[in-house]
Structure formats: structure tokens, C-alpha cells
Image (cartoon, rainbow, N blue to C red; front, side, top):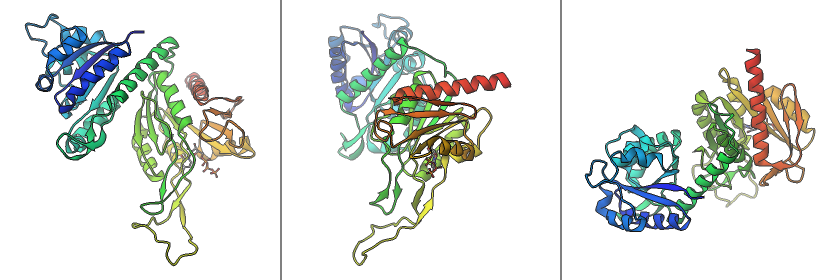
Amino acid sequence: MTFNIGLGVTGGIAAYKAVEVLRLLQKAGCDVTVAMTRHATEFVQPLTFRALTDRHVIVDDYDPANPDPIAHINFSQNIDLLLIVPATANIIAKFANGVADDFLSSTYLATTAPVIIAPAMNVTMWEQPATQRNVEQLRADGVHFVDPVAGELACKTVGTGKLEDVENIVSQALRLLNAKTQRGKDAKADLAGEKLLITVGGTREAIDPVRFISNHSSGKMGFALAAAAADRAASVTVVAGVTTVEPPSNVNVIRAVSAEQMHEAVMKELPSATIFVGAAAVADYAPANAADAKIKKEGRDTMTLELKKTPDILADVSRNRHDGLMVVGFAAETNDVVGYARSKMEKKGLDIVVANDITKEGAGFNTDTNIATIITHTTETELPLISKRELGDRILDEVIRLRQGQSITN
Ligand code: CTP
């Protein structure tokens, strides 16, 4: 399948790397049309892209040499993906605020294609609250980012701001396009309008600046459910602790390391959610007094750590629930699985609890499969060994079933 990609190049030193991105996309069989901002042309000549694509490179809609009188509309409607490499702080700010004062920013507003932005800039510009606000806004608007990486920057400073490797940018673009095609094939948009908020992964509770208490959670179950919901047209925000796998590309990710941070992030996002799923393995206890400096072992043969309970995020969400919020929890048990899961459902005020016996082969941490029983107040569905992705879909089916029940009784 050939993908049509709109490659937007903006004015930074890394603009020359857009040439490599173009070549890699072409090698992968994509049809690429290039648009540049005026400042980008100071770094790379449009002729370079024109020679490589055999197409007019659009910089200015109003340029008499532009063969298409309504280029920003035609360009934006004929692409499967808008990919910006590199993206300056300026173009990010324009996209975030709907400014359309040149060809590329008008194209962003006029397109319905997914957008991937690969920023590159000086570390201070990247970390500037204004830039971070704009990035957050765009993430919330559904834009995907290939975040800049740490390294030596063109300005000789060291820090985060370097363009991600071109191979990585291209592979993320292709992954998104392939996932979109797959979704198109078995499109099911039954969660359109729903806003899923989900906790994923394990938390880390600091003992001192070097050590922590944590668990074996990989984040696979939560990410699989998040991907399933996004593919079914829900808008998805993941609050992710420590994970060993990459999040899906079509969800918003907020990182939170400790139970306390995860609790804070969830409470902030909760008012706009319609479904909450607690899939994280949140540490139940954290050191009562984390040391500010590294604890030394000299003179200590034994050591006692005092632990305090962490906030129960799931229970707190349920206590603060607003009308229409569906609350789903997990119960990982080793014995009397359904009994303990049901009592968790009552205690934490859940609509659905997904119980699994972690002693069963194929149901534990770090596997791609799970064996679970989906429990509601009136039903109990025991499932065989299935993939975590399929279990995610089955849980979402149950959410929809309960929603329909709600609308019938209302
Ligand atoms: N959970 C949470 N916040 C916590 C602890 C747990 O949100 N501080 C959520 C988990 O994400 C999961 C559910 O609660 O959805 C079940 O967690 P679990 O730790 O198994 O239950 P507990 O009530 O802590 O019971 P116990 O550890 O005694 O089995």
C-alpha cells in the first residue's frame, strides 16, 4: 500500500536531516510531497527536495510560481500523514494556537490526516514553559510527537533538544500509518465520544535518591487496553508509571513515577474522563520518610524501613466519581480469586473488576497473554487464555454493555 505523506520542513539546523527522512520514506514506498517554511529555505534549498521528489516544493501559497492556486487545501486533503521534521518552537506554537499565517500552518489547520511532529531546538527553548504548554496542548489535540533526545546540540550546549534519529522518526511514522490501515480494515468506532483515563505500569517509591521499592509490572495489559480503546475511537489518556514496553502511538501519555504522583495526575485528568481503568500495579506502601541523601551502610548490620500506605487511586476515583463515569479495576490474586475480586469491587465501588489468578501460567506479569474473569454486579465471565489486547477488547465490550443498560434504565 502506498502512503501519501506531506513532509513539512521548518527552519532549524536539523532541516538537512529532513532530506534523509524523505529518502527513507521513499525507500519504504511512500509518495512524499514537501512543504517548507520560509526560514527552512535558509537552511536547505527547495531545489534539493524538488530534485528528489520531482514535485514543486510549496513555500508560499501566493507565490506566482506555485502551480496550484489553493495549494493548502489540496495538499492537506491528499495526504495520509503530515510529518513535521524538524519542528521549531515557532511552528509548534502556531499549531497549538491555530495561527495560519503561512502555507505549513494553514495546512495543519486544513488537514484531517494524523500529524507527527519531530521537534529540534536549543534545550532552553524546548524546556521553556511556553513550549511545553504548546506541546501539551497539541498532545491533547491528538498530535503525535517523536520527542527530541539528549545530546550535544548545534549551539554546543548539551541537553534535550536534538532531533531523534531519522530511522526512528520514519519507523514511528510507518507504524502509525500501518496501524491506521489495520484499523480501517476492522474499523469499529463504538467508543467514539468516550474519554478513557487509565493507569498503567508499576510505581517506584523512593527509599533515598538512589534506591526504590517497585514491582514487576510491565505495563503490557494497560497499554493493550489503551490501544484497543483508541482503535475503537475513544480519546485515551494514559497515566504511566514504570513500563518495560513502549506506549501505543495513538494515545496521550502522562508519566508519573510514584503512587503519589500517579494519584495527582489522575485527579487532575479525572473531570474530563468518562471511563476510568486502574490497570497500574500501584505500590500499596511507600517509605514513610525517604532520605534526602544516599543512606550509607557503614555501622548498620540490619535496617528497618518504616512504610506508610499510599493513596488508593482507584478507590479515590470511585469516591469522587461524577455522573456517567464508569470505573474499572483489576484484582491480581493468588487464591479465592473471584471472592477477593468481588470484595474489592464492593470496597472500592467499582462497576467492573477484572480478576486474574497470577499463579496460572500465561497470566502473570510481563507476558503477552492473560487469563481473567470479568466481573460485574450481576455477571461473571470466565475467559480462557487470550492475548492482553483481546482481553482489553473484552473489557471494553463489557463497558459498552453496561452503558447500554444505563441508557435503558435512565
Ligand atoms: N490500586 C490503586 N491504587 C493503589 C492500589 C491499587 O489504584 N494504591 C488499584 C490497582 O490499579 C488495581 C486495583 O486497585 O486496579 C487492585 O489493586 P490491589 O493492589 O490488588 O488491591 P488492594 O485493594 O491493594 O488489595 P491487596 O493488595 O490487599 O490484595
